[in-house]
Length: 190
Image (tube, rainbow, N blue to C red; front, side, top):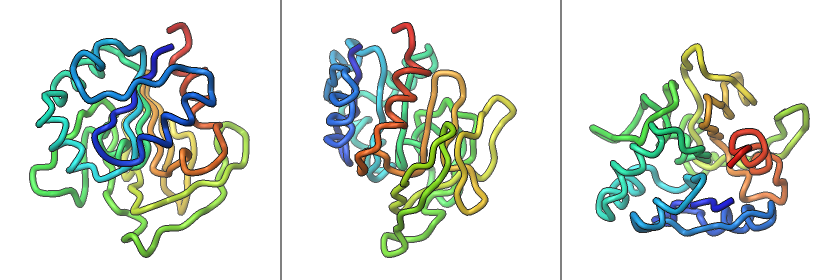
């Protein structure tokens, strides 16, 4: 499977490494031709407003939105969760997203950079270490959203159809559980 990793800003290299470790072919997405060639997409952590700005600069914003609406499997970590959310609290003025997930996220919900932390949580029946860096959380979710993990009483991993999002950074750990779940459960048959 050809897995695109949006490589405009953020920790895309770590997602590329995780994709390789899971046995798939990563493609750095910076151009429309690269977006057109993929079977799935990963939106990395980083700074959500910067990623949107760069996606518009590279003429990728609307094409990514369209591919998501057409059913492309997408996984977003941290800023990627914000980018997949239909609604944002505490966002920049007129902040836009690719959308697709019927959730409201609160940006920097766990605090600023100095408030970053690691915590254990349950995901898919297993305990895993999660790295939270200026992380969002899900404030509200629609009826079609499945909550897969919680931290501090808030959803931090969710799924809706072909979309998966985490507010933490599994790519910064050696645990491939989230990536494997994405490839095996959400991308199956591709």
